Amino acid sequence: MVQRIVVRSFGGPEVLELEEVDLKRPGPGEVRVRHTAIGLNYIDVYLRTGLYPPADGLPFTPGFEAAGVVEEVGEGVSWLRPGQRVAYGTGPAGAYAEARVMPAAVLIPIPDDIDDRTAAAMMLKGMTARYLLKQTYAVKPGETILVHAAAGGVGLILCQWAKHLGARVLGTVGSPEKAEIARAHGCDHVILYREEDVVKRVRELTDGEGVPVVYDGVGRATFMSSLDCLKPRGLLVSFGNASGAVEAFNLGLLAQKGSLYVTRPTLFHYVASRAELEANARDVIEVVRQGAVKIEIHQTFPLARAADAHRALEARSTTGATVLMP
View 1 (tube, helix red, strand yellow):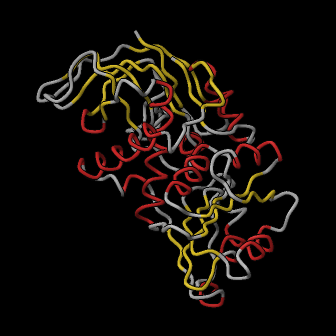
View 2: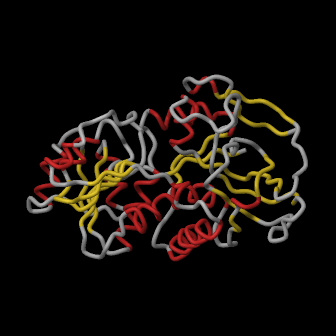
View 3: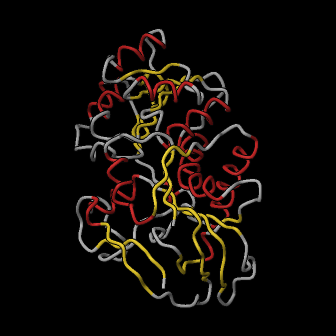
């Protein structure tokens, strides 16, 4: 028997229930993984509330990111072995569990010099930062970019990696404490959005030009101001909805504000093939091993307290990464 979190109805953190289940043996192409650490991400909230429908409906177990040890491999899995350390960040959902049976194709072997908690916290967020900075918009040395929620899990990685690429990083945060964290992780200029006019400050810091790209994981609350921070033909990358989904808007605004572009990407379309997944994960592992990107784990909760972890995440009281410990 193993413990896992199950969601039987959409709602607040209270719908995250702990249960015990028996696990089947892995079938062809599958492995059984014993989790050692589980990553917490905002997409888990989206599924819990029903904003994103779970692939197989209700009930379901949340979680797309974890690290662990292979316990058993199914038929046809020749590149993994029992006892091998692995991690994943693209699901399928089900990571909020002590152990699970899952497709071998999504697992990435983890080198010995990266610990389990780091591995669990770096895959989804790290691979997200990688595709955003290198593929959705290829950040170039000397460019100035804007990152919303710069002290969050993805935000801290974006700031560090963008700085590593030679960019000048502007970031928004909600408190002086978060500002210090962002500055310590590559953010050149921090804007306190509760105290300052973000658009005005971005224009001041760019001599009136605006930025070529805004990375916005906040959603509804920042969408329009993000557009106003862009230079002509700039790109708004809306990759999350922490404040709620972006509402419909008049496309003519993009012309009025400077022939702007908007995209709503997801990681899953950038790692659709095994080759793409391996290339992305390889880059994440490399920048972490180099020390160019440090994965900061600032909160840890037992798996049984997953609801408390969700409350903290939604209250924006977390910084960096949060992991659940089975």
